[in-house]
Length: 105
Image 1 (cartoon, one colour):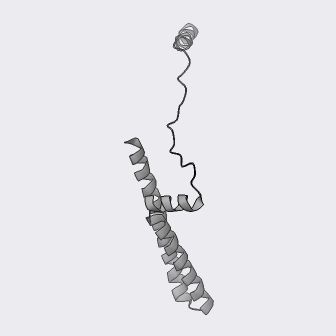
Image 2 (cartoon, rainbow, N blue to C red):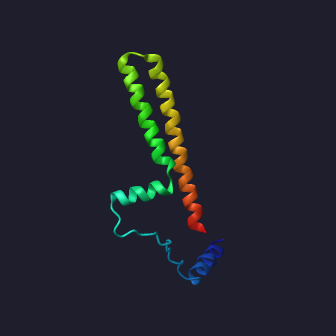
Image 3 (cartoon, rainbow, N blue to C red):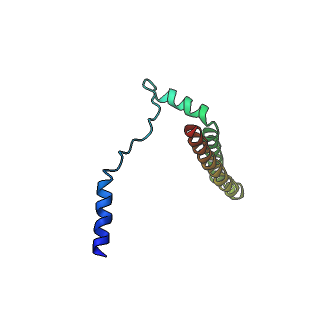
């Protein structure tokens, strides 16, 4: 069986080196600052910033309720924060899937 393995290695070597890996070119935005990039990304997937704002708003209201001593409302807001974070994460994943599908077409 050693001769069989040697012939397989020889055949693989005769096929030549593997083709080079050439990743597809990524789009470039040469003169894009932070603000321009933020606006472009927000236009591409507006649900992610909306989810972030909801998460921060609910978190702030929950912390304010906690500070005032309203533990029931504070707990409710912390649970709502988890829902808002889940929405944000789902929006992020959805945007990534849509972008991947668009780039393949």
